[in-house]
Image (cartoon, rainbow, N blue to C red; front, side, top):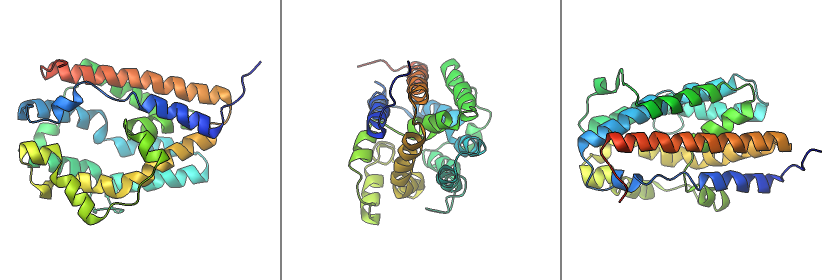
Length: 250
């Protein structure tokens, strides 16, 4: 006998419960002033190769599965912003990422032909696999909820804030760890500005598209199980980067 489907609110709460676990012990060390430029470079190189550069491609694969029109619209808007920046600052998010890297003193060529660490490679393989999954809901859950989301999702989804003013966004930029601890010029931080301008809407869209279309219990369970698996892979990926940087739990 099949189990009763979770309500949309119940399902969303289970999704948020998984996202509450998306935290790694090394994050505070990457955000303080004790990390070196070489350690940061390794960290950012892995991030760029694993998902930053190709994130719009992942989304396009899900769009290509021909989900319902409402979902295609949400995905198309996200792809458009990621690949063009035309909803925010006029440059693609991967380009803005590389601008931030130049602000740290790295050369663009240092982000070409990157060798992935073993756990980074495994995580990337699963992102490729799941973004092309025959069940578009699973791909959408992994990419738009998990990869784009954070430990702060519960607050952002249940208590959405108003769009930030330009002054509020500039305050966030000035207090960003790269500006505070590594003296990156605020002029190089448009990636942070773009995220603040558009990501609140993307977070709402992500949970809406998954919760509205995963409506039977088998599909809900498949989504939850997949997110638990990708969480485990992500934690090992972050472990690998921390080890390669010589970091240890405090």
